[in-house]
Every structure is written in C-alpha cells, then in structure tokens.
Length: 144
Image (tube, rainbow, N blue to C red):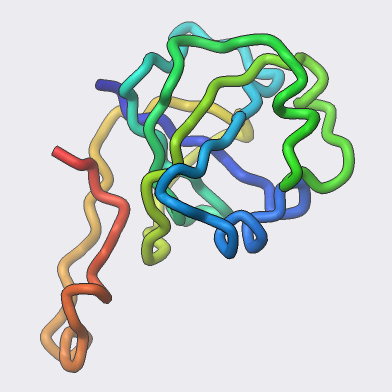
C-alpha cells in the first residue's frame, strides 16, 4: 500500500463545508492536477490531505488510477475555477476521518505526491497530556 499526500488549497476547496457535511460514506472526486506522475494511486492506497503544511484528514483510494469525467468540475465544494481541474482526470477517495492537525514536511506544489515514510507524531510531554482524553489523541495514523 502506498501512502499519498494530496495538497488542498483552502482558497479553491471549501473544507469547512465538507467537514460540516461529512458522514462515514463521504467521497471526494480528487483532481489529478497538472502534475506528471510516474506512479498512480491504486485502490486501497492511503491518502493524507494536507492544508498549509498540516495533515487534517485521511482517506482511502476507491478506484485504480485516474478516470475522466465532469465529477471534479461538478463538485459542490469547489470554489471558483482552477486551472488544475481542466484535465478532468480524477480518482474517488473515501474520506475516513478528520483529525487533529499534524505537521508534515513537504516540498513542491504538486497536488499528488507519494510519501516515502510513515508520518509519526512526537509523543506529548507530561504537562501537555494532563486533562486530555483518548478522543483528543486521534491523529491521522496509518490504519495498520
């Protein structure tokens, strides 16, 4: 299984509306963008959605590779027009969970990029952990 990083531009996609309307069956038609890719996502691959350097949501790829159609252009969460949507290439992603923002190092502006290493969050210091519950600890870890 490959873990992918997908950049979300909050100026072009209404993340707050998606989060408010999210259900366990929510799906996203994620655009391929204009990037050239040597590898493509496969069904069952994990996706880490990144906004401004933080992982905020995890998803699972539901289709092999990219499909072509108007699903991305018709997505009700899109804001305005974006040049990367012109290719009409997209893949379906099931949004598994939102989580506490987790910092991630990333370079470049490609929408899609595969992550070479697992994301690991530093453990909390004792003084940070006081008063926190297990529900507070939900992070976007790989479901393995």
